[in-house]
Image 1: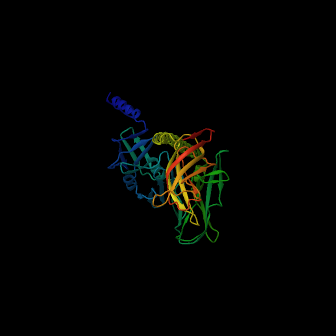
Image 2: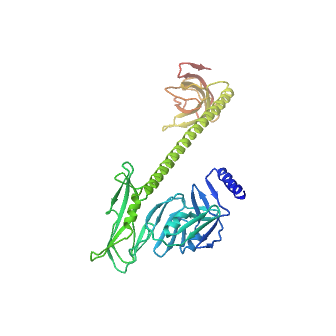
Image 3: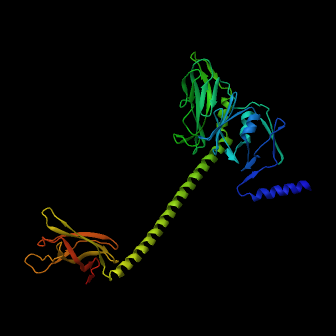
Length: 415
């Protein structure tokens, strides 16, 4: 009865978690029968068990390295290098690509890695006792990741551990034709020619699931053999196993799932960008509408203050041309809703003593001007200039008036 209650509670807990992540607070981890002290309990995410890397790596004889800048995690021991990256489903064991069910993550400050990756890389046996314990047995079974050649592979780099220079390290690259569902092999793209003793070389610049060649997707590489300068060839004893692994339905299913996830993520990103762009456009349109409404309300107030005259005199100055003849510069603003194509104005001319400056041979200081061929939109400003010919002594103008306005729709306004 007690066991049934416990199972029921576990079931209710599982269905209450909407992000398909469950912690196992009472789950103990044993390595070769010894219980480990864990600061963070294992978690299960989408069916993949993630365990704390540091204590388990240490107990399994692996040295843990973590580069915060690149987010790269490495577990090392003699003859074995496990390489994985935070939040990436692509890992490698001695250069062999592995597609993870879930990527490594930081949980409560603890680096968590897939349990299966550890067990497969070490040839360890794992048993899970219901929701109580995980037991890892370091049985050291033979795996396809073991490398019989005198080289060290760390992620995407390989080092010659031999005391002799080598002529060539043959590397086979595997590419997947997603249309024909076939794997193609190329043994000439990444070969290292002139492999000196102690030297380190990059295996390939290709990225799993991203790099393409002949429209095929790169899915991994394998070390095939090592040739010395006497043409003696030493073959990697596990090459055929790795080759079969890359051709296997299980691996290709993972590649297809990876590609689909990336495609879905790209589509989601594009949709999010389009949605954001559409939202930004709507916001811009709403702002534009609000700005127009505010501008229209402001113009309406200005029009009322200007006694409903459609043109407002915003400024007037006197300047002089190259021969000293005064010019009047008039800046006006269209306060109405219609486009203005022409207007007439008048000013009275004075000197610095505020005495009227009459037009030569005239008894009037009134100057009248016209501005035509315009397109002054609602709310826009325009400055026009007239030369005050025959008003040579004028230094200032007063009593500036707009006397008539012509609109683009054919209508007009007169004072």
